[in-house]
Image 1 (tube, one colour):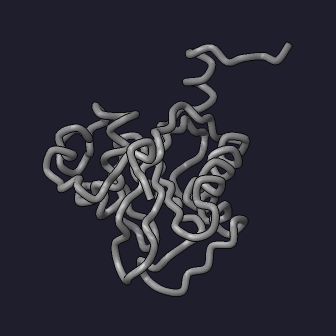
Image 2: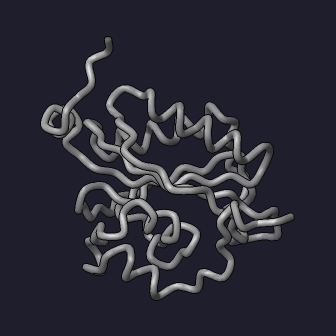
Length: 177
């Protein structure tokens, strides 16, 4: 029988909390998101705690297909830079090519929040710099972490969600092509 971490062991082994945004609008996006979550869930140093439902969202940027988006919460033993490198490596494993800013992609992984950290380095900003403006992030994040406080604004995810237009975000269960 496998050993299952109790809450105290998990907190010591994985002392940090991270929120990750996942998106895809090329290929079989549903399968890609599911496979990416499975890949992250078996990555040493990460413990998947929750994932949101999948949402279909209107793309930001140049004309392109709609996205499927989901958010996930992880407990982690990684520092923010190592976690970012893990996310970028995972994107690469799924064939991510960076050709155009905000262009279509097979897989996009964003480190949204890490504990209550505020960090501004080249290549790594926490919280994600546009998170509070994007319904496609806030809607699924609100499903799993409505009380998480954005350390920049001091507002909860639920409060931030009230300030954005959610009209382009549809639950996949209510979407019909």
